[in-house]
Length: 94
Image (cartoon, rainbow, N blue to C red; front, side, top):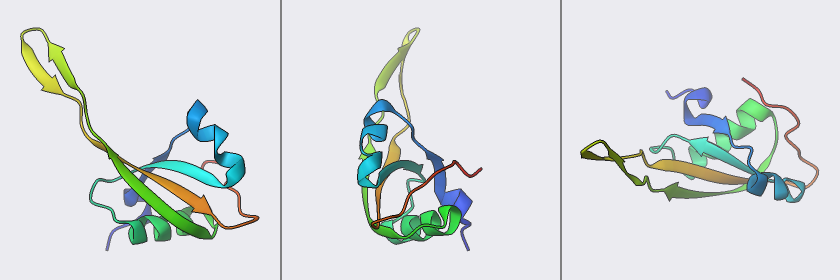
């Protein structure tokens, strides 16, 4: 069984993500193999809130050059979690 803390890597706090927080939308960095149902259960268990819906997307890594070799930053999976009315994530739980 996968632990909820293994699915959710972190809560992303950027300028763009904090603009949508009054609407009840929060941005999370998740494991690439996680699906929407697992993400929903993990957020509800960790933060003790009710989730309305989950939207996921994969942010593809960029090509980088290190000396004479080409490299690539890793692909990241992110989830936009919309909470039900009246729900709010107040603090980051470790």
